[in-house]
Length: 392
Image (cartoon, rainbow, N blue to C red; front, side):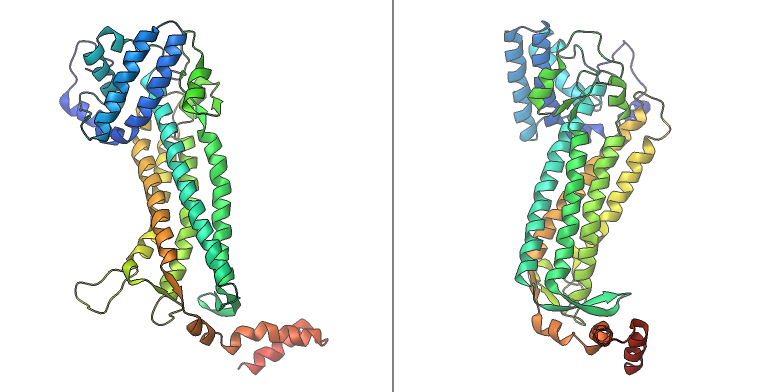
């Protein structure tokens, strides 16, 4: 039964269209909705809506749902529309009138917002931990190969002498900036919207700090209208930091694709990290790096989808916002997957020091020659011309 049931049946085509992909997507959201439902039960107990015995049986049944979900046996039907309705319908079937009380003083609007915030906190935490692991690998790789020479390139042409340590260290620094940005975005996410209703508050006395503490939020959102208006804005910020991380990985992957080419062979990828060709027996392809490289383009698309979907909407909830869920989930997954495989790639990358040393041709040291003349008193521009003419 729908939570808004009023005694009429919706057109089946309209119902399918408006429900969309939520019965599938909400299986990801369901454990977080169970968490916020448990917290809400305690808020209702404090408000005198539920007895301690009712709280006990509701929480027990919520955990039954969690176990069914873990076993893949909890389903969300199109008639349910979403995980929130599916959970309440289950409680009502099992607990009767007690189950019907759980929706007191909340809306599906603040339910989905709270569950989505919890999901974002969880996924961003996983992304941050995996990014920290990669940062540590980058630093370790940098220290291990700090003195190995490596040509620096501009315009895809040799430019100046560098080292492997400094090259990989640039990605460690970039990832560190991404982590700083992630900490800021996590602060935006870490605000409790439960109890704000459909955007205009709840006309029932609630101690919202109870759910804030139980759910581990750092802050309770004070403006109920902004809670709804923040949908899309916060998600867009989350996806922005994902694109920042993937931008770092994009350039790193691009470098390795180039530098592991047989024509360079500065580095070698472990065979286990490569794929083959169905027609060319000799091929060992860096598919994993090509997919890492392309991931940022996917997530930029997801970010734009979320941000543009919520533009020009009046204050308050609109059904358009339902369409931000899928790109958000996809963007978070793509980012975590890309970081996970990057951690594997960096451990399977071998430095070919002999090839790197042979690549250190004399033209890389042209600027050093200019400065040697400058130290002897030759004006820089004259020194530049002298060295340039010697290279003709």
